[in-house]
Image (cartoon, rainbow, N blue to C red; front, side, top):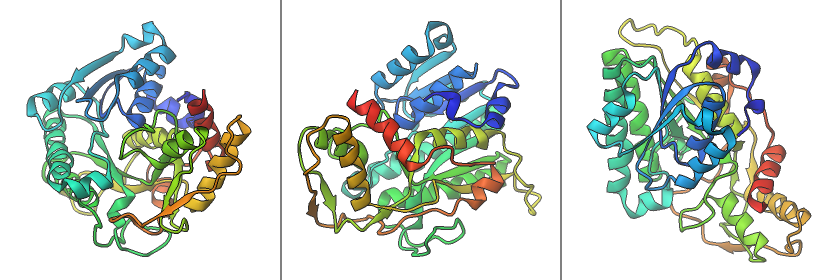
Length: 348
């Protein structure tokens, strides 16, 4: 991800000094984009990843983008966020922790709830403890729109959440509770970013738990009919990965309001998205047209419609006012631009 998509204020905040950043899950889709931006901005980065879902090829792509001299500022630590020693080593001398490592599949969480809890809850607790012990300035962690569960308010606002509809969603709720309690009990400043649906290069189109956009692109360019779960009127708030990178970096430096509770360190949870809804039927049409315009033989294809997926939220759109005010977040790319960049990358 080129830093040209980052707001000037965010670039200047990062470049005021050379700092050390710990990025967990850095070999993944989002993490590798964050690492690329940090390295381009002259920062030192240590990546903690066990490669259960992350891929070496993502880091290889970052290396080719930034060049060998800049790559020398990067350190890879192969390890599990559930291992105290690995967490302590990753956080040592770090100024900021960006915690993205997680079991991120709703479907897999329904099949194996215990594994999701172990990675997302126990792993987050280990990282919070290590970050506090290392004296980091701020702990920025990835949450999810899944925390809204059966709450029907649209657009979603941070203070109105319902019952989690999957073990994955429950693990993200618990992660937010843990972070807030670490702020309250030991004074660790935390920011939780509730991602909605992220769009961008390096998403994995393969496997049973692949994200919908890369999977559909892969199927369309192969002349196959993608499957839509349900009637296609399910809506999502799709957000380009460039805006997720911006949110993470901005959250690290944001001047959070002091809590009315004197025992609570500055802490915040906010939605990160575009703030607009797109149905799966609309998304299918945009991707079909995009693949067709780029030479794919798919302009006549129609989707298959399958059953609704257990644990899925019907409508999901974000109110982003808290992020705009709290961390100076502002989406830099619209959905059309984000999809165009994604299509160009996948079809190359």
